[in-house]
Image (tube, rainbow, N blue to C red; front, top):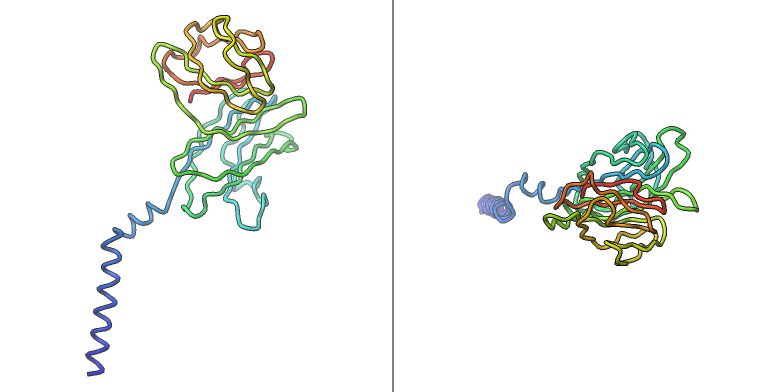
Length: 223
């Protein structure tokens, strides 16, 4: 009787385990659900070449190790240029990351921030400068695809008046992204602080983020 009880217990345990796997799918499917990803791209409007670093944030680790070689995501992005997207995979429970930008040559200028990721999120890391020096911001990529217009939003280092076709439409806020603007004339329709922004290298119907200062556009990135 004792042996029969043991055998029955084994059958019950095996059956319960099979039921769990049956309800949740295979272990590979479960692993896929628990593994998330994000795309991180550096827009470098610093006056020097820069590197992008991305690392999982540990509970008590702070920013320790962020600028180690193992966490180098994109290297040597030229001044006023856009880097190659970096695809970061992580366990769903480890969705807090440290992000840093450091100048590629001297390694003396470092900026860092922390971000909580959403699955399949696409991010811009904007390295920018103001009168206080170098800094960085993280913003979500976003599209606004209205055909036959230049769809543009702006990221500025200060507060500037923005006009389209001579009409004041908004003012930038330092370190913030504006709403999308729909511009018809690529040559001189869009102005920031009275300076015309040349959009003629852009494709009508596509979406763009422009990093600007009082002298005009420093970088144009395709959203």
